[in-house]
Amino acid sequence: MYGPLIALAILIATLTAEQLARIKKLNTELIWQALIWVIVAGVVGARLYHVVDYWDYYIQNPLQIVQIHKGGLGIFGAFIAGSIALIIFLKIKTQDVLDWLNVFAVVLPLGQAIGRWGNYFNKELYGRGPIPFFAAESFLNLILFCVLFVNFRKQSEKSLALYLIGYGIIRFLLEFWRQDSWRIDSINIAQIISTAFLITGNALLFLFNRRV
Image (cartoon, rainbow, N blue to C red; front, side, top):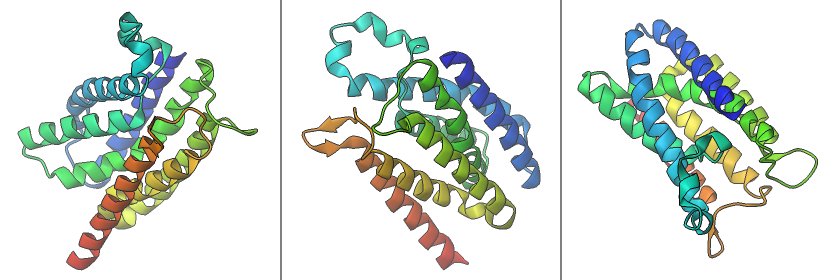
């Protein structure tokens, strides 16, 4: 079920992005063209993030590196690699990069909320307490999507900034709950990246408010 759930998450997020693009009068055909770039780069980036996290295991089991159907994808790796691929694609197509990033920022937490349930079917139940990590993040991502979706019609220009701030807060706090966080010495890598999200998001908001 892991693979089908990820596919479903991508499909629903893409269809939603198509509707948002129509609101902004953007060329919706570009979404489906960009999708291949984003999926390939996102999967590679997500898997690379996971493999580096569990390097001690994969160095002993190198053949399992390509077995992504068994789970093991890092959202931060997917975000970074997928964003780079998307920006390159948009530059090639001479599109307004920020307009499109604001569209994709709205639907990203929706895809994350659905895709997280792949952890359930793969029995990757990270986290302490009565609620598994994946369920808590899925619920919070769904709330983030609703906020971004409602805000999009009024202030679509803030969507990317608000996503970075919102998900940065969600993931930073949930990392205290997660049992197998990637650490280098005592440094939680996900919390470092979440902090970078928060700083970047606030910087974008500051620049937007100054321009207005």
